[in-house]
Length: 379
Image 1 (tube, rainbow, N blue to C red):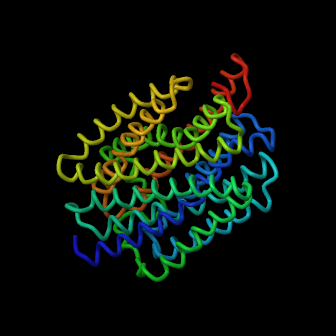
Image 2 (spheres, rainbow, N blue to C red):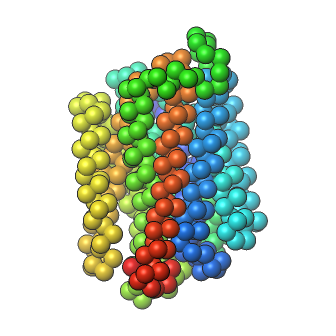
Image 3 (cartoon, rainbow, N blue to C red):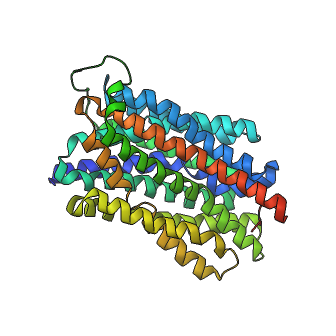
């Protein structure tokens, strides 16, 4: 990889990390808002899912538009949107409905930054370096998510959830400033086939669709884990005698450490997929991740170090195939429909990401109604 390409990729990854500061800030303060607003698990999960749901609707348009217009323009406008929507949350959110609406609007910002940024990376790097480059970019997603959790949890403890949501919302605005200086205009390639916004040829590309299906299954697990691992840790701490605010802050810090582990494994997985094949990395990672997913929920009453050890292993394998999956999609896509293919990938993947947190929340409500217990400490 050339030095200039490495520097450019590093700057794009920093931008991605900054835009992600609004991604899990809500999760960090979720237990606090559940108590303050009297929300059930299902409502709390729906607020997280609203972000993903609006994302998947917007990404069909914004990612497909990268086949028609300058990707840089889409990226900058979306980063600014994400920052403004994030700043609106602590000002206007007063309960379940207003919070869900504002989080949904913030999802548009992610739709116009993450996938367009991935397209820019895919176009700049040839196949022999693309797996590592996209894995590094995807790891910035995880790193930014981890910082979002840790920073929001710390700020909530010292100044309340409003301060936590407001400060983290500055991240996308900083990303817009850096991206404006780093990114060059990126006009799309000449159209060779369909003039429709979403090329129907994408749905006839079976190899790409199978890879997208694998990505969707990956997202179902990953985003269910990201949404509920911090509340799981917080519930375990409250069960052991901690207060809700203290438990939420510590749980956010612990979960951010797990996400940091995952960001590193994402890079390693992308590097391995360049050398040993995408399929081998994907299958191995997903089977080991599934084993951790089946196990960790039963550790609620186990010693804390056992729970954290399994969570750390889970953090390694839940993301290690992410770069290989996304790289596989870019390699199997028709070059003239790359934006449309990435749009379908992201839409279906984040449909799974939107459904998973809410489904888990409603399942928790159902189990809690049978077993009893408070929302903050239900086993």
